[in-house]
Image 1 (cartoon, rainbow, N blue to C red):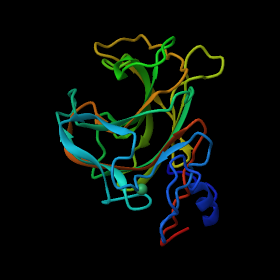
Image 2: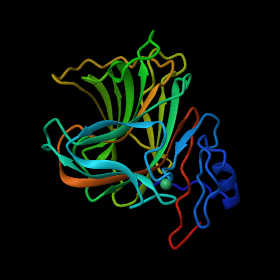
Image 3: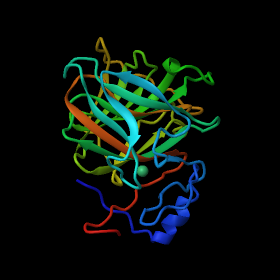
Image 4: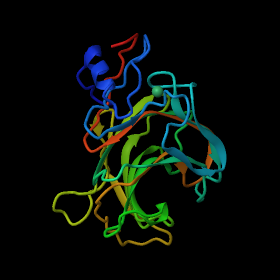
Amino acid sequence: MRARRRSWVPPLMLVLLGVSCAHPRPATQAGERPAPGCEPPGTLCWDFEEGRIPAGWTPYRDEFSGTLRVDDTRAYRGRYALHARALAGGTEGSQGGPKKTLRFELPAGFGPVLWGRVYVYTSPARPMSHAGLFNARYPRPGRTGGAMDTLDWYEVATYRQRYMAIWHPPEPPGFPEWVRLSDTPLVLGDWACLEWLFDGANGTQPEAAEPRVWLDGTELQWPETFVFSEPPTQQRPVREKVTDFTVLEAGVFLYQGLPVPTDWWLDDLAVGPRRIGCEPRPRAGGAP
Ligand SMILES: [Ca+2]
């Protein structure tokens, strides 16, 4: 089920791509692979090599046990990654769980289409509970800004040990929400490249598109879809169209309890109006 690899890109090309990142940084150190995939115009990318929370990101949610910081315990590339460490708390099957996230205000005029890409490493167990990893929010039609609790949003997550994507109305309560649950187990104990497309323009369609997600370059399928709400409803939410995405949230946010203390690392996070793509995975035994 793991992905086909994209064609190999020469190291010199990766260097050239890396220096055009929206957050340019000095030339990479000897032996360090340069940042791929920051080249489409308008792309914002974060490799966490500052060794601390990057500029512009601020703490958002902090519930139950665990920490969220940039450290050097594991990285997809370079030395540092964003590390959600030892998240735990609450009761599996009951609402309420550990949440450790950051938020970021997008530049004005970002537009209605948001592609994203992040490398994720999860250990030591696949959570059963809803574990959000990333979301992007936008004002409802006719509005131009506003607080988080007024914004519609798209989310990438895992649930019942599989990948999941959701469209939500403003939170709280965040539902009734439209849920797409894949049949692909979340990658455990290895790096996974997740990509997503939140197409809030969706051509001439009356609603914003359903979220789409790729794992290591292969688009996920969604054999299970449903409306979640408390109390339950069968009425599907209207996915309101997007003028501009305005806010990102990244980290890990469990909506039900997590009995096993679990770590996540996120590295090379990027968003933009065009597809960013995944780096070809290093071949076993050394550099590509
Ligand atoms: Ca890094």
